Length: 171
Length: 167
Image (cartoon, rainbow over all chains, first blue to last red):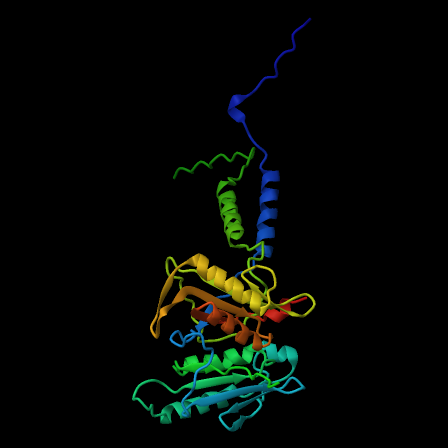
């Protein structure tokens, strides 16, 4: 039986076809470019709980406090009070949340001005500390508005912030 | 003046060196693979915007628990610890107590020497449209578990409208 002749190999000229690999690589590149969603920078607002109050959830506040009250009516309109003054409704839908709902929120600049005025005239009883601010919000108020008020307090360098306890219905 | 001889041009076998292009393409692929979040690590929460929120680097050895408040498919609000199952406020309290005990790092309470406070940190990631009443529940659960280091997550700068991406 005759032996088959081995095919001649030219060792010096080895070439690989890169086309298919480049196709796949570009496909992967396009996939990852489209699938990528960069993470938004996420920060935190510190709201440490009082640690020297035992197990009690509430504490008596001094009379010299600034109280920001947030309520929501049946139409979904958030109304706010800065102490006894009613906060006017904002003229603008100034966030994507409000634009999505189509309902403007309270005027945050009014709240900021009010807190600023109260802070400027605040005289601490013991000579130290900043104006105590109490944020009193109804259960159904969107969380965004609580953070807005908290943000205003942080901007005004107010450290003594308290969240009012929810009302417990009497039976 | 002698004329310069024209260089002989070889028209056969023109080849392009693909190596640097492939290098760059592979580099890009590796970059996008690393950056891409294919699996959703955390609950989808549209956080409120707060210009004063700060990105704080976690201290070595510290542990941060995330409590998410998001909307489910049916529109109901879901309270969950990290990526766990939906919890009620009582279940959250029990879970936080267990986590604090498992973490095992406590510090003294300045006003009550018999009581120890957990050094566990809790970050609340609450959807901006969720009811604020959830905060009361989470604060009460943290207080019961003797966790006082609580923070509220917020986006520092919004580059795009997240609602536009919602189906």
